[in-house]
Length: 328
Image 1 (cartoon, rainbow, N blue to C red):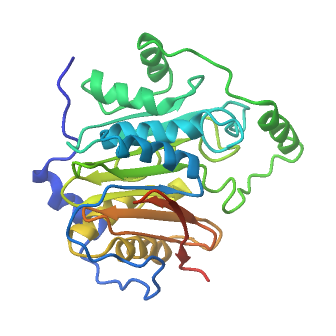
Image 2 (tube, rainbow, N blue to C red):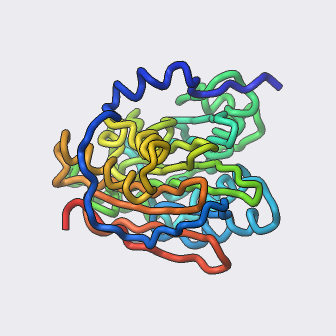
């Protein structure tokens, strides 16, 4: 097996911080959504975007059995990738405007190693292919036909991912072909998950079928390390959901983690990341949401529009939180 590479070297950090404007003094909203804990002891945690309790519970079972956070997040998001009733991830995902279901996913472990696939077709579990990219290649991202060839070489099987329900909705859309994604429906299309295991190690995963009826070939933030997902084992992790273009322009998940490194709580960091979008982009008709957890198990979430939720496991129960938002 080829050696894996660290994705970001500390020697390059200062220039990246300058590029995304981490020196800004913009103030975060005073509103808070989650009671922040004060413990200094690492807490095993699973946090994920939207109300996907089954995914969290699956990941939490891995953590409870002493499993690695990386295994937990892969197992958790695979629940959604296989669920035909979830039309934003994997099998059953809404197609692009050519009727093709194209998938994006990335995964990142406690060592800073990561793997990603984008514009992948016909493979039900792109998150597992992304992990293979991380573990079996010298690369971080494989795309399109190359990603498919790699997946087949690794033993994955091609399947038809377009379910009858999603096909009928697509055919109805073709009548007018009007591209106006609905906020909090077609406008999120992601599950992002971050976990801390019993050893205190952090990993994350993100997977999606992308924006419904997008242009063929479009790739959003979900498979891009630092945009849809970022973890740092010394600090914490963050995941994004919503209109990927807005997240890409601000490297939102990386921004959240770096703000936590500077001392902000996960809640404050998520708020500031949303503020960056609202300050510099057309935000009134889009949704972007972030959820994050730091090394101590403190967590938070915030979004542009009302309606974003996130799920947290730190004990046996799975708790759902409705995030506060920039727009009330």
